[in-house]
Amino acid sequence: MNIAMLGSGFIARFYADSLHAQRRVDRLTTVYSRNEENAKRFAADYGLEKHTTTMKEAIEDPDVDVVLISLPNHLHEEAVLACAAAGKHVLCTKPLGRNAQEAKIMLDAVEKAGVFGGYLEDLCYTPKFLKSMESIAKGDIGNVLWAKSRETHPGPHSDWFWDKEKSGGGAIIDLGCHCVEISRNFIGKNIKPIEVMCWAATQVHPIDAEDHAIGLVKYANGAIGQFEVSWTFRGGMDLRDEVMGTEGTIWVNSFLRTGFEMFTTGKGNDGYVAEKAESNTGWLFPVGDESHELGYPHMFTDMFNAIEEKRQPLENFYDGYVVNAILDAAFLSAESKTWEPVVLEDWRGDDPTTSEKQWASYDADHFIIKEEVLPNGDKKLILKHKESGKITQKVTQANG
Ligand SMILES: NC(=O)c1ccc[n+]([C@@H]2O[C@H](COP(=O)([O-])OP(=O)(O)OC[C@H]3O[C@@H](n4cnc5c(N)ncnc54)[C@H](O)[C@@H]3O)[C@@H](O)[C@H]2O)c1
Image 1 (cartoon, rainbow, N blue to C red):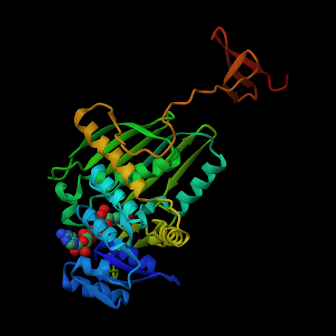
Image 2: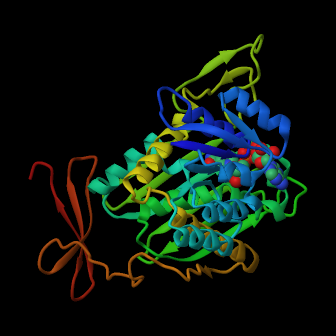
Image 3: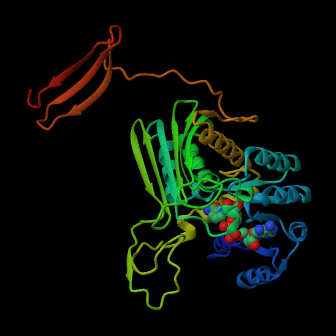
């Protein structure tokens, strides 16, 4: 497929590096940048036939099958609407909108136009994430009770991120969108997010938006999603997830310390180590293949396969809309300091009634609370009588 890139900044280059890597067949053919020099440089770097300073020209180019939006958050809506009007398939970076209202307009536009709307949530395509999801689907960790996702770094690389009007918020919108969608996948996308409690503060930077936040997202089945996001963290980019299930646990570390450590005096290096790395001397934590570890190749494979197979990708515009709705509730909660409902005028998952709990039985009269082997080898059972509610313990001696 032929792809038009909108934007020529940081993420546009990550995407282009992933799309033109190895022996991939889908190619960028044109790039839009408002700045002629940047458009020209990007086109030369990636061997593109064309470049333009007019967004519409790139979108309406008859050779273009798919448009890839790599523009600041406040331009996503305009770009998506132009793609829908031109009948072009569209892949949009995260967050879909600055809020759920914008995201819903974009969702409705692609659905009405009958074009593909892929949500480029790369962190839901990392090899470790995909493997974790496979394990959860097989039942390896039972029912997911709590899913925490953390993304923290020392702050973004362009002016517009720091301008609340253009970005839609600070660390919550920029990083929270990743964390919320990661937890939502682990817990189950069919489970309705009900309400959010969030703490947010501007601790370090002189900006109107928050640079640090922690939030809890309560789901209809009783599971909890937790996000920890910060633009104040020092030491690089920390991407970690933890999942607690009734039968197991998953811990994933995706970026900062992935098993590759290197020492350098710094003489002769060009300064780049890995995204958001703060140091390029001494002991460093490089990343083998950043695009791969961040999920871009698997993401684009799913997107282009989905377009060909006329199916939804793992991450689509509806997911982007749900994420925005959860983040809207987080912003409200940070202000009100209470749980705030997630408002979803369009819910496509399960009926959000909490299922009744099924406790595990030991025998006809007792539930089992806990089983443990003690240091002396004895086996202890903690039981609860089903009628009286009395809690007792039963010890079986190691050699008895
Ligand atoms: N992991 C990820 O998925 C990831 C990572 C980084 C950024 N992003 C997203 O990608 C988008 C772009 O972020 P970035 O990091 O590439 O930013 P950037 O500042 O590096 O690049 C933005 C691009 O948009 C252009 N631009 C800026 N203002 C414009 C305007 N008013 N009109 C037209 N063009 C304009 C810039 O010149 C540049 O080409 C954002 O939505 C961001 O959230 C996603």
